[in-house]
Image 1 (cartoon, one colour):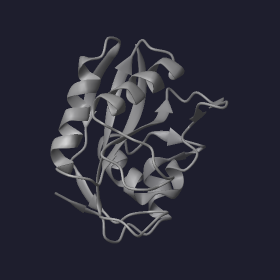
Image 2 (cartoon, helix red, strand yellow):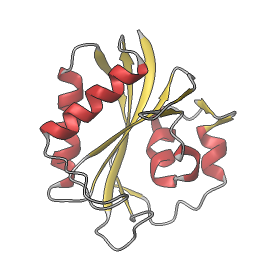
Image 3 (cartoon, helix red, strand yellow):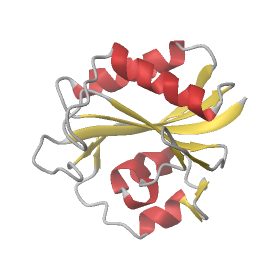
Length: 157
């Protein structure tokens, strides 16, 4: 089994219920075992800021899926929960990102690992730091990357 980390987010409808449903859906997928879950965090929108606040969280998983198989499982859960991609960084009922996969580097048309923005987004790093503060991503720990960012407006719920 390989250790991987996922980011979760929702800003449409019952956000907490959607994160719970995503966790349940991922846990029910063959080849994925959830080993840790952060608390949920209320976070301001990022990128496209003209939208409702988000609820974000992070998961640690053990998987026997390869990185693309894990991505496919995440996308399938998103689809099952009604995700429709309308605009980049826009509102979404659920978003599940593969943040890190056992330190692997992947860069192709479907997947970039580690996630290309993970070290630039406090809304990802705050929940990730709760479950994996010493995880090294791109040559620095989650804690060190988070220390460089403004985490204002991010609150546990």
